[in-house]
Image (cartoon, rainbow over all chains, first blue to last red; front, side):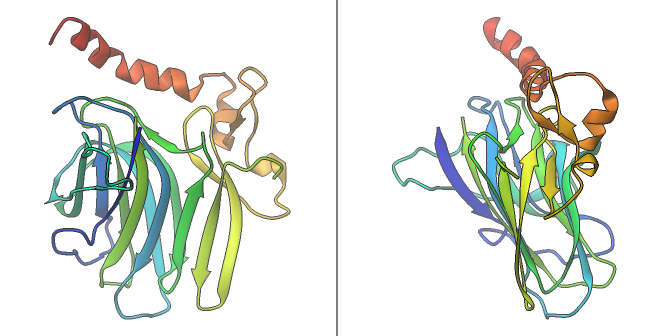
Length: 157
Length: 85
């Protein structure tokens, strides 16, 4: 069981937020080497554009395909751990395939605010060990056209 | 909550607000529990699996634990691997 951290700042070009959901970061299980369950125990949503008072809608949903995005190397929290077997991609230019009505969490939040969630042991968001099953961390806004940031910490088991 | 499953930390220029959460034992959804919130509005306790569940799963009225859902989702891959595929 190894822990990893990833954010959409690690690779690629941040994409502008628009009125439709933009996926900032996606993690998924992969049978490339061996499918393993992924358990997300922390996420942080925020923006890094010009501050203003407007609403941001953040969402975490299940996915079945990754879309077009930049590959991101998740960083092991313990440097002695091996590389993640699943896939981490971010800054999507083509949205992933999101399962309908699969939002695990969504909230409307002021653009100036940062929202962080930390799970206690046993209460993580779980991705099954199924090829291409994943979680998309995405954002949209009716007014904000700058960029967003999401940071994840998760375990692969 | 007596035994929260996590915390939301909302940081804005006005200050910091911390609320608690739990993860639905049937569907894995995150449920935010605000201070003094009416328990009837946030879900319930499944008396079969003894897990806190979200309002949507309370409305469904059956017990289908999330762990069993995961095993069903993974069953095809497990079978294919057992065949060496």
